[in-house]
Amino acid sequence: MISPDEYIEQRLSDQISWYDRKSSTSQRWFKWLRFTEIVAAATIPFLSGFAGDSFPIKIAIGALGVLVAVIAALLGLLHLQEHWIKYRTTAEALKTEKFLFLTQTNPYDKEAAFHLLVQRVESLLSTEHTEWIQAMSKSPKEEGRANIP
Image (tube, rainbow, N blue to C red; front, side):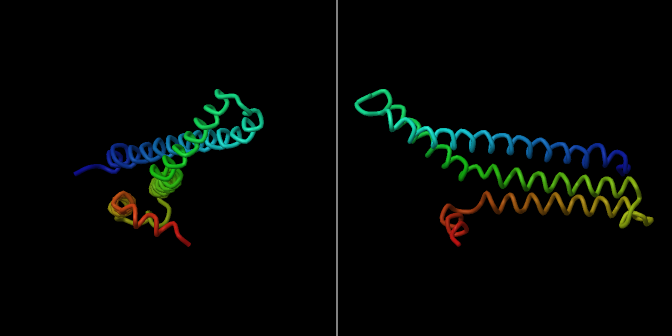
């Protein structure tokens, strides 16, 4: 049998750290890609005013257009913003459960508090995992329909 301290250290704290890291990584990549996309898109009309017969500037404009398209496709494919928000939400929910348990605050102010903690934490993790599998299993057609208002 695992003790509450072992569970908190080996499972709960480990999962909080994992979700925190993944949230931060997704946020960083999302913001970096979005910033790059905005700068590249804004540079295209600026350079167009200088293009004239300049082949290098026309190549730069084309390359920036390709960059914008690739970044837009990556953001749609990787769902970085959605992952960032979902991972952050899960990390914060796990932190809440941990601190409620450690402070013996409702619902953890009863005799079976440890068992309740395990059930609630594992339920959160299972729900997040199930939602992730469903999101990754969507066909491109389903995903396209989900984005239509």
